[in-house]
Image (cartoon, rainbow, N blue to C red; front, side, top):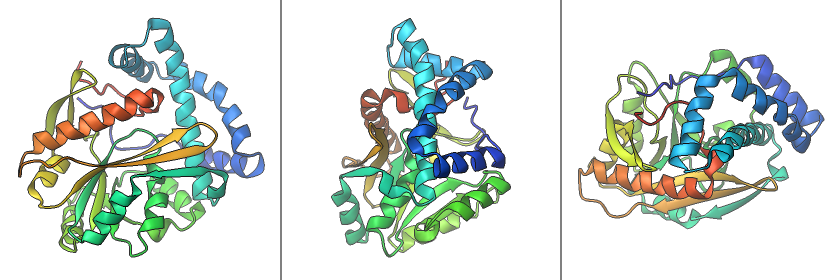
Length: 292
């Protein structure tokens, strides 16, 4: 069972410190400060560390010592991703370089006006995907589906510091299910919706699939919806690389029979496996993801 509750950890003060350090000291210096922070999180959250050790040891096949070292490296890379997100949000995008791999697929989907679903996961730095989308979507035809459980104070602070945040539409998942109508309206206008396919909240319907050699549970809603639409599907990831460089991957899903949600899920897990083999330290589901 997923232990993710849809809420981000942290307090406004921590976010304010992040912002101050990035602006006054610099991004690379902020990276250096992550070393003690990485050690702290490994030691302070043993349940999370155990879940991540299982991922590195059993799912990635690392040796015992390499898996232990990977715990610290994984947290360090996650910290870099957070710093990069803040830096880009506050207008320091020019500090980074970007490679658009498959951007022609997104552009073609927008030109076709058939609607469609973009599926990603909690790997890499997908939270900055909106900055990529904004470059190719001046008419705001891409909608990012996001959990609406961020603490109100944090959400307000991020909104205040972010530049051009409203260039991309967000549809927030809400308890009253009103987001379903917004999604339906966007699809009716032949626009694109983008959501995560690797997390579910407790009591939600799920589907099973083998992922990195072990059975795991995935949210049923997105794959069921995608299987019923006569619209294209693509998988999108934003992965961090050395020297403050990011690589946006877009891959068109294979043609799949109508209403075959399991086949779409299988294509997604294979796609995400390919990314994680290349970027093993960018798996950011910090809980017991696999059923074991």
